[in-house]
Image 1 (tube, rainbow, N blue to C red):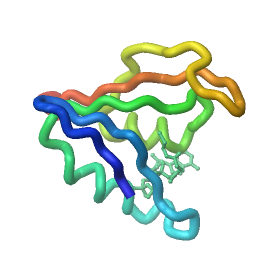
Image 2: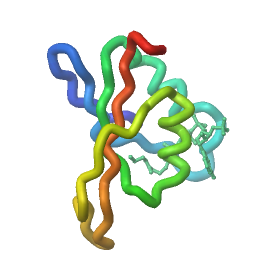
Image 3: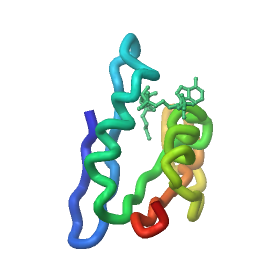
Length: 87
Ligand SMILES: CC(C)(COP(=O)(O)OP(=O)(O)OC[C@H]1O[C@@H](n2cnc3c(N)ncnc32)[C@H](O)[C@@H]1OP(=O)(O)O)[C@@H](O)C(=O)NCCC(=O)NCCS
């Protein structure tokens, strides 16, 4: 699934996930491709390498860090943005 906040000129990804048995088959890619019509923002746990790799592959750039944003366990959030014109 992909859950998105749709604002006037930007999307914010609230959540994206693929069921574990079905990962690495391009499903998240297919979902993301559907919303590449506006700039996209998101936040991700600093340790979430799989997701960060996936976003970098899709031209998302780190724009800032929110210190201690997540709880259980406490962790920084990386804020990333994809500008649609750079695609
Ligand atoms: C991140 C997630 C949504 C990717 O879903 P998916 O359907 O497996 O993704 P796709 O098959 O479309 O894309 C695969 C890409 O993910 C990244 N990736 C997947 N597994 C990886 C791993 N073990 N290590 C590093 N990168 C990985 C790579 O960029 C990979 O592309 P590549 O094969 O060209 O290297 C999935 O791993 C997931 O549901 N994770 C748990 C939920 C989550 O963390 N969501 C993000 C919250 S911000």
